[in-house]
Length: 143
Image (cartoon, rainbow, N blue to C red; front, side, top):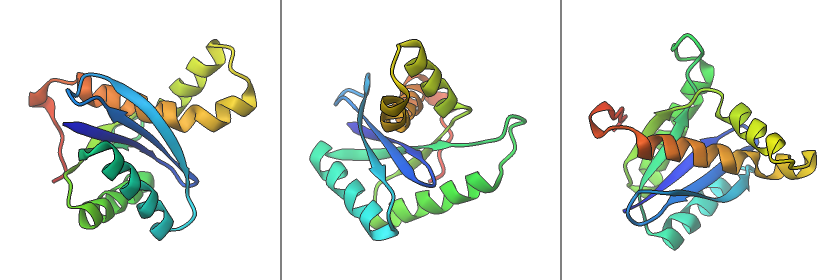
């Protein structure tokens, strides 16, 4: 079963996908957000192309573990995805994944312009990787 991992942001959506066995996560693309319709169309193409059966969205809880306004935006986005595609949409807590992705790229010597182009994709990989690595019993689903 392939799983789509998303790093949902105001301007971009980083996208990763698992292999068929759900063992590895690979970065796929970054969707430049324009409007709801174009965002959903781009995601629909990826869901079809990779035969995705489940979606995991990074859940941006605060450092103290509480939910903020970003969590509300992700909640709305997850409901939209469930309605549009009829797939289960789960949350994976993310804490500073974009910062971690930036540090990985900086350490690898990636230039600033290139980092900006791929940081959201790498953040999606980190989110999906965290989901794939967690024990099944600690699953936090919103469906």
